[in-house]
Length: 132
Image (cartoon, rainbow, N blue to C red):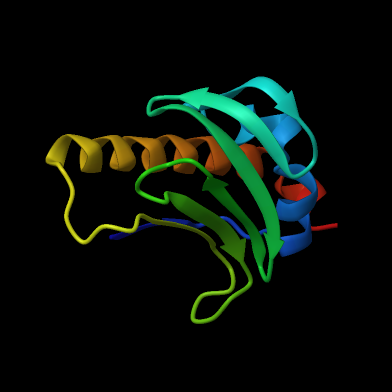
């Protein structure tokens, strides 16, 4: 299954890569938090689905995050600068199931809504800084 959120805020992929770090998870959302070891590319995190290793990978247009031990292979990207609408931020989340319990789908939707709100507030609040 896949899920999308579009944030109508213009920024640059380098800004996403430089500023949305594991060290700054609170900028990304309120649903996950560091609970153990961390470095620039991974951390032990806790959240609504339990405890996992979170990985952070630079990709074209932004970042990919993944929950390594997740039985649903949950991963999401935060990107910008890609057609057909290069002037928005896109959050794209996938799981490796074609069907899932409605309660889990609702949790995913809430997770994405939270990230959308946090990222919109962060990038809109810093628009002048981000575009320099």
